[in-house]
Image (cartoon, helix red, strand yellow):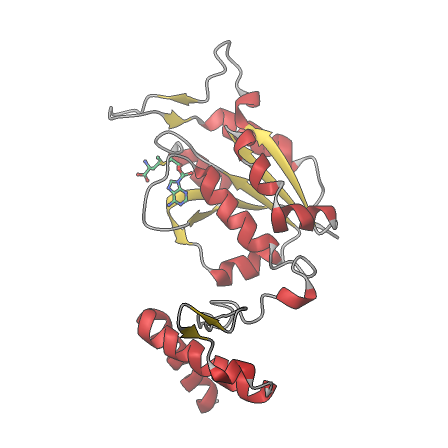
Length: 239
Ligand code: SAM
């Protein structure tokens, strides 16, 4: 069965070019995933189609109101029997990483809620009990770009989404290491040559070289990942 992804947003049109291009598009065409976009504003009940209001206690900006979000979630969840994993995009959430993308790619249904303005009335979080995900320590204008980042990284992990030739197995973060350096034709460019090893045709040696490169790059560029990698390796050896 395909993964159903519902996205609740005030700007559904932002998603069309991304979900309609490249791997997200091909995955949907292959029947691996379905995207359903819902405009939260459709659930506004007043003449002005309001979705936000001023914060109690004062302060800048506007806050997304409970009623529209609760009604949108209730209505969308009823459209399919599969229970949805609720996700709210928020800079205050848990940091979204590859491990979480892998976990979410195994679900049957995801419901992502993109905020805007100053964010959500806190009772939306209390009431819906979603997983709050942040794509990094910076503030975006809205959750749409963050939702697209999350969706893209999940969809490419669905079995069959990538061609057999470009699987996700060796990619950065797949096992806590970043990827090895890649080269393509020509063999020499501007005085820079492709490492001899990659031209040797010896697949076992190439695999070893690539693994060494992954370790070297991770150690040099991402000491945080390297420390985790060593810890896990040590734990495995102690078992
Ligand atoms: N006032 C909020 C705060 O300081 O935490 C920021 C609100 S931000 C301007 C508006 C919306 O963008 C958020 O509700 C969230 O959906 C989204 N957003 C912004 N930065 C994000 C991030 N780093 N990760 C995920 N979503 C983000």
